Structures are given as structure tokens and as C-alpha cells.
Image (tube, rainbow, N blue to C red; front, top):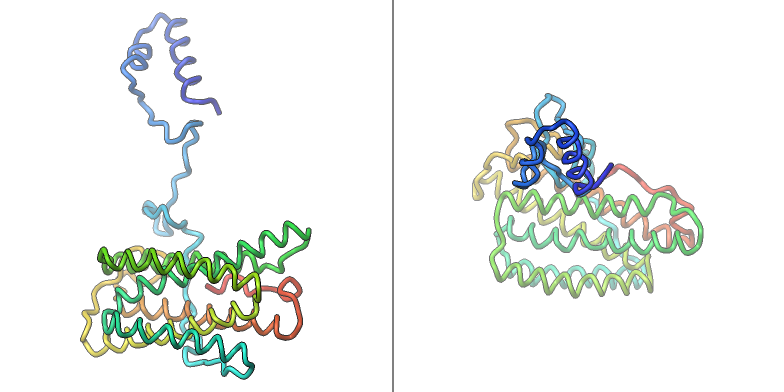
Length: 286
């Protein structure tokens, strides 16, 4: 486990000992028969898919792939009854109006912006619960991992839709501004009231389910071309090789429905006066 400098020195010493000049010349020219892929010379393992072909995705690994549960109820709605719930619902509904006016039927572009926002709450909540676990010397009940899984799953949605469309410069600027505002607002909100923060995310996910349902309607009506599914989506969700864009949107919508249920569940735990650490998190749901 030596550094590249030490390795080069040993090769030079070996060349001198055996009277050879090949390695010495090779070192002088800065060349090597075997590429060093990291500073310590540690070569990463070669990953392959189930069919034996090489794994080409650096953003996730074969064991991160899964089959989405599309049987989940996508029409479920948490009726707001308390004042905080009604406030959370009103906030989310008020945000939807400008988004609909801005994107209209440009569903792929809408999905890009949606996922840049949706990937924030899980990371913020997971980070704060992680710090609390360290600070209080206590378990998290699996919620740190559950929320970070949610954030990673939303990020993979973004990576998938980047294969469908590319954001324009002004959409990138909008994402930059939105993420800056939303991250800090959610961070403060989670510190003040985790139950309210999770309820907001639950309603955000309900709107995400609605957005992807509209996307599916346009795909089924032929308004949007039902093109072949991106290769990254086929590997991530273990879709058939001949999967279409409609199949991708279907599994993404199912993911959002799962996130909806998990965040409403987390909020309900707080409303019942319990702690997340005392209620096992639904791991592996995506």
C-alpha cells in the first residue's frame, strides 16, 4: 500500500540490482505499464451486472438497484385537520401555481426542477438526525439511513431525467436560487418543528405524484413521444431492456408515493408525542 513515489523508487532500485535499464527508462519518461488509479495505488474492484457485462455507472452500484413497487396507492391524500397541517398544505399548494404557469406541459423540464428540490429534505433531515444521534449518544431508529436513502433516490431521479432533457441556462439559474432559499428555509424549519417539516414534504410528494400522473397522461395520449428508457433507468430500476419512457415515469411516481407515505408517517409520530428513534424507520422502501 505504498505511494506512487515509493513504488517508482522500488522499481528503479530493482532495475539497478538486475542490471536492467527498461524500468529506469520507463520511470524517466513518466510512463508505466499499469495505470495507477489513485494516490495509494489501490485498484477498485471490477463491477459487473447479473449478465456478466461491465457495470458502467459511477453514480450508483449494482447493489443499489431495485425493483420499484408500483402497486402503491398513488391517489392517497392526507387530509389536513390541525392548523399546522392546513398551513403546510396551503404553503405547498401556493408553490404549485407558479410552477404550473412556468412549465405548463413541459414535464421533463418540470421534473428536473422538482427533483433538485425533492432531494433536499432527506439530506437535511438525515444530517440533523445524524448530528443529534452523535450529540445525545443514542440510536436513530434507522431514520438517518431512511432519509438519506430518500435523498439519494431523488438524486437518481434527476440523473435519469438528465438523459431525457437538458436544462436551459435560465432553468439552471432558477435551480440555483430555489435550492439556496429552500435548503436554508427547510434547515431552520426542521430545527424548529420536525413534525411540520415532514408534513410539508409529505404534501410536496403528493404534488410530485400528481405531476408525474399528468406526465403519464400526455405520454399515453401521444402528446409526448414514448421514447426508449434511458440505460441508467433500466439498470437502476431493473427494468426490461425494451422499457419505454412511460415505464420510467411510472416507477418514479411510485417512488414519490413511497416518500409521501414515509414523511406523513414521520410527522404523525411527532404529533403522537413520540420520538422517531422509538419507531423503526421503513428502510429499503425507496
